[in-house]
Image (cartoon, rainbow, N blue to C red; front, top):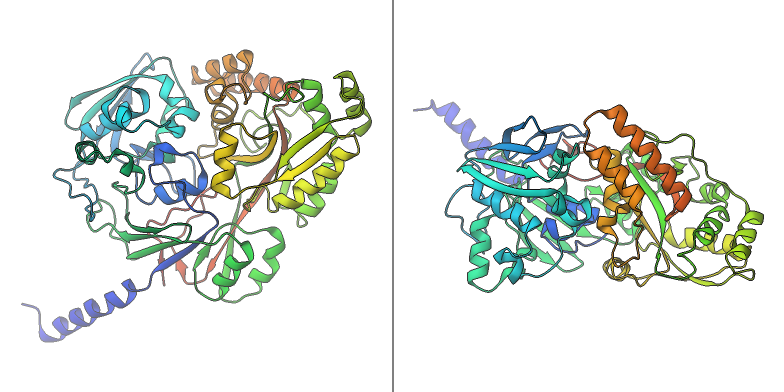
Length: 525
């Protein structure tokens, strides 16, 4: 039995813990999640939500891109480079929620269910919940896996169709979170398969509590988490679309962290003694994507003309006044290995007019330009960017009509090919060139011809995946970038730094190179 004084001290300590636990950690997010099934979506905003709940077999090391164990404690690659054998971590619990009570711990059956869902459209759950899984599809993962087998309750083997040097990095990405086969069976039996996107169940440090649409996502700490017990017991994602309102809420302590801010906001934030700003040079790019099904835009000369008509120097002075971004030339930043230094941007309105005339449009044409409706580090003001590009295009006879939509609607309509030109971007998890190229520019993600699909480009990506020699991979990517610059499926815009503001009492936050938010082991002092 404890001595009286030690017993009293222990009682006082236990009484003080609920006071700390009662303080929720509030993150002011810029957009609402599209859903809660990580495989179903491919946007950074949604992954910021689902990564608190779900975990993959492997993970990226906090603050970096090295691959580290997660739900798999170790793995081996076969000599032919086609088979990965994963040894699963024991003692991992799926989350117990109001809508699901797990009857067993995580094991090989859950990995089998998750991976088969990615690759087999005839799997029972896929037949019941017929929807494209954007994450596995857009990465090319769904087409590269030959099959998966269970060797024992805690060992699985995944067989690939061809060697893939990027395979482990795919398994660390947000879409690759492991789902509960037991929960999926329950949903199937109850004819509620679509609820996998509404009521998530994972193994992560936080579990889903509730969602008020376009207002807030609430999480609670997972009491059965296999990792560290979380000091933050209540985590809230407050959806605040207006960037200035996010800053005011941060200053008023209504939220303790906020989504990335613009350069123009830095002075005011850094002058506040209660706040701090962390930053990193991120692995990202913003761009304008052409709908290649449009007759004018199917013509390479037209795409080139629209690109070289943009005065990037003037655009950057307005968009990035503190110099926190560089002009994008290739589809990934120069900090990523394999970047092609021979490529160049060009500003030449006179040549642009000549190219339009050659293409059969001497008097120009009308086009619809979609302005990004959310603030991004690489595009802090979509409306202003659209207006400046509109002025540049007008000088070569192209009349741009600017449109925009609410973020979810913007993504949905773009996915259906309703745009002429729309603003978008890529942020890499792995820092591998393939993460920029395959997920956005390969034939695997070309939808009904509206996106770029070039067989020669695709063949180079395939060759790069099939070798582990970085020098040889870089040579393939250099050639791929030359095809990209010749064909110009995008107008490349910017690579930027990311600035994350927070209260000074936030502890344990680690800046990820892709600007994503992970709240494991983050707490208020």
